[in-house]
Image (cartoon, rainbow over all chains, first blue to last red; front, top):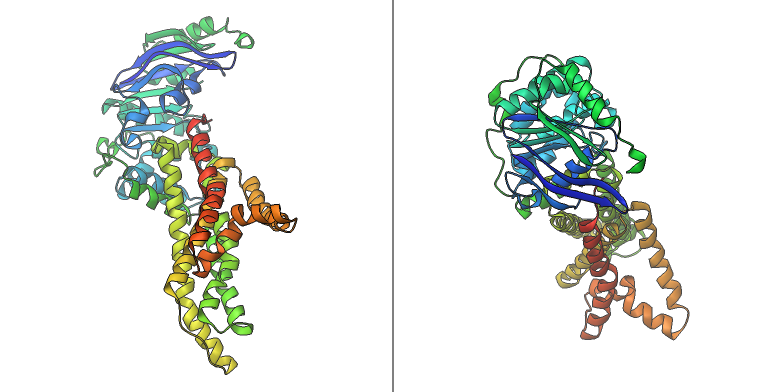
Length: 235
Length: 261
């Protein structure tokens, strides 16, 4: 389970996160929605120990830095562009696999899961499209046996087939016991995929409710109703 | 993306691993691997080795036929490339933004920096050992070609000191890279400092004394020559403090505190 417990983050005078609390239960997908600059990525960074805050962000009760081999139990994709362009896709995964101590055979499995071919994995990342980088990042997040997956806009750059395949993959991962936290601007995708939705605006949680997959239109209406008053210039 | 079919659930989990912890040896091995897993990194390592061999060949062909001198002449190239290797191994994490992934896999950032230092030091030791191993045949062949006798005896203690100096300069690169987190600035500081100390040493007694204590190029000479004495220990430690330990500690502090974006 992923837990945000009264997490507050300031950048100087700017309040980036204001007393944020919510949970992502195991075996479920939580869609994390909000306008640009609302605090989604900041919250995810705090969860992964990249940024300090007050309050606690934990995975199964432990802060990220307290987990002994976090890469093995938490999969994360915050920025698909943050990959060494001179490495091949396979080498990128091999470095991560070596670090977290999983067998090299796992690389072939995760490439298969995200739909990257062996030939594509042998190319250097600088030749990858954004969609391929996203798939590589998701593959890396799945290298271990994640109890939690943290994905920041993983559908960016993917074609419709890719979005659908990743949606099916994430559903399978969640059904296997993983707590998935997924930020996205694709409301219809989140409506179809997520079990729960958390909407954030100006650093505050505006909504945190289970979602009925049949009411994508409702989600869109609710999202715009909640975020239309979001005056980010005041944040 | 080839299909939208559900993946086999068995493939969702790694069969073997992940390991319970990230042992330091594994971390250092990964950092070693990262020193050679791109074309640029391989090119730098190739230049390092070929340049060092070239310096030895030139020295043996035209100047000294003493194997000890021939081995240590590789320092001309090693002193140029090893610190750059150290600098780039740290700063590339920021230039290429891979720190985001690296510190997600190992959030104890100090361990990553120490692993980088160990990996770069291992490369410095390995290349120094390779040059020592090649010095004997290089000198012998050059002597045969020139038709003269060669001095083939090697002083193990002096060569160990010379290797230690190569490691020190590599660690200086790591330290500057960690402190500045910018490859260009680190390289400029490293090379400009060497030149600046040289000028400072010429400015009078004070400048000469300062350089004698704080210029790593000067203070490491006794160690590299195998002539380390009690008097040379203080200046060597002072310059290591200024150029290696100090910047590395500042770098650890900076990297540990900084927010990753």
